[in-house]
Length: 336
Image (cartoon, rainbow, N blue to C red; front, top):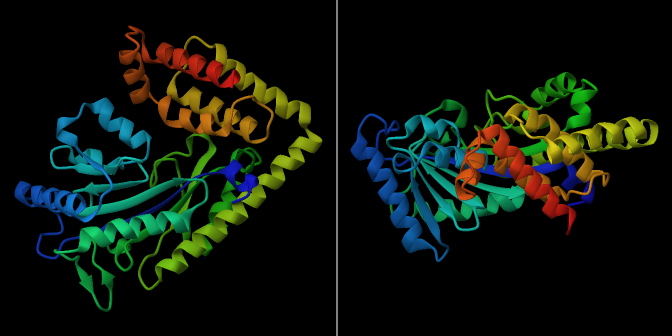
């Protein structure tokens, strides 16, 4: 992957929806069915691989710990609706996570930095192969994998790229982009998926249809559209660098100054400045590495900030603790 792609593609994710054939599709009706899903998945991953997975039972976690996993995109917001029965197996390197008792019995996902959908698919299918041994999954020869929601029936595969598109947003091009993407059977969503807002100029491009399409075709389609959007965004960045250099640098440094020296900052304001921070990092204008910008995308959210304040024994409101975290992180990145 080129540096230009890396500057715009934040992450790639492949998610597989699977269900056990001998259990009701909605495991919310009976707690014993939900527990069976968890036990089967844990047993399969414990005996089928040497990789270390940690079980996270939502009912045993604090709200901040649960939300921190959402901020890191290791579990979905929908799983939080099922705190009593929801769980996740997360691999030590956090590249693979398996949600249990969300909309389907299992949601197997791989999340990798940058534009690496094919590699993410390989990781997800490796985990699926281990989970399928013994119990098998609900499958129809004509329809494919059967799921709770008909839109996931077929491959049960959702591929998505998280893209940072500040220039397309500021030049009001996203309306045209959404229309063009929809014609190709894909969709644009916000940072947390369906129904969420595009905070920080972050968008997820993903497939809408899984029925009647091969896994490879879905991944190729999302990758190709992602590449086109990356090229469009990069062209606008280079045009602005050439024609509006002073204005661009002024906006980026102002955001850097706010993040580096502000005393109070809420989550929404942080995301606005974060977009400029990452843009400035990617364009080589600001001193912060892109990797540090991407790390802050999760660590400076409310749940993580409260965890940070607790570790540091800071008795501060979250808006003030966020600024302490930002100052510490940005100062450290300046010295490396």
